[in-house]
Length: 146
Image (cartoon, rainbow, N blue to C red; front, top):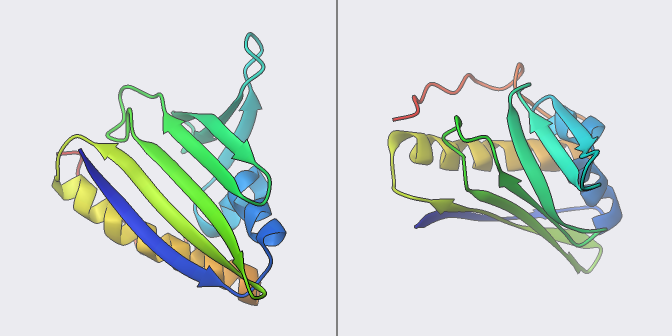
């Protein structure tokens, strides 16, 4: 299995960064449209991106860690895990990002690696300068699901 691993330092406290990666309003400002849902049967939180891609939120530790597990089996991200770990360091927050569980390195995998780097910079810009570059503002992703 392959994984995308990135690290970025943001000039803000972990509470502010966590709000941007753990709420629908925050995610929409640096990444893409999102909805946070609560499963009526289990009570567990779910994340919906792009209207059709669902994730279980498998870890949620305020100001520290959030993990998403893709459960949409018709999506190239199916079965992968996206983890944001936040570490406070002298007034900054280190964001340790991992997108794990890729079965192979494909064009989609490589494109996602570039896109995640772009969107983490968008997150930093949102937190530090007040303006992110989410989908719709960002350059279009051209990779196919091959």
